[in-house]
Image 1: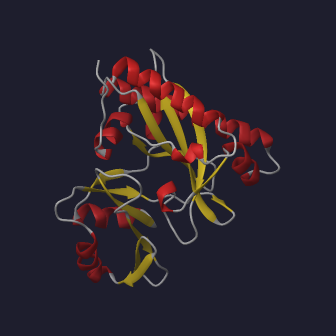
Image 2: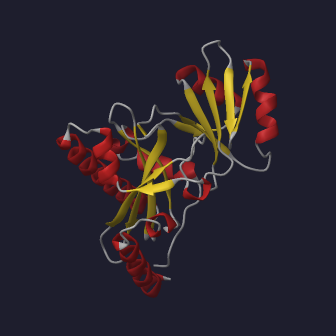
Length: 251
């Protein structure tokens, strides 16, 4: 079977929700409309508006409730405070009418050195089984709410960052790593059932400030520059080796 890629985030989210074990790990994610946005803002302190098709952290807008009942709209390094009546006119200047968008529940994420982070789990299927080829933490650049390597994030090892988050609880570190592995494996199998032909996945995992593990999104054509930037290149070369096998067998 030839290699397959799935670009639409909503399709991938829907496929993963078919596994009841994964629903607990998926933030609420709905197709964008003004009505849906209003509902999501009423439910959550922060929501994200993302292109349904897109990567590298581009085109994402954050809407965050303020204590004065106003809303902070953020994009890139820019922030603007608006009242609710002004929200849609501002968003119309930021969102392309030619693109489809989704609205996603924002999470209260754990921070490392006061910066946001997520974990990229790189999975490959060079034969009949999905394998975790590597995991890396992406620590966001100062002032940014996205953790993409192309937008200034820097890589750290999962063990180092989790040990810093839970310095007095090594069992919590081990449990979190085990849960990340299990959730990633379940996501890969759920997507594989729905979209046969997938061979490579970049699963973006978040850990919130209560230690809960979430799947933010999954990329079916992930880059692995972040792994190359680590001092220890073991994971990078493993990914590269398996990528060559996949390309030779299925490309």
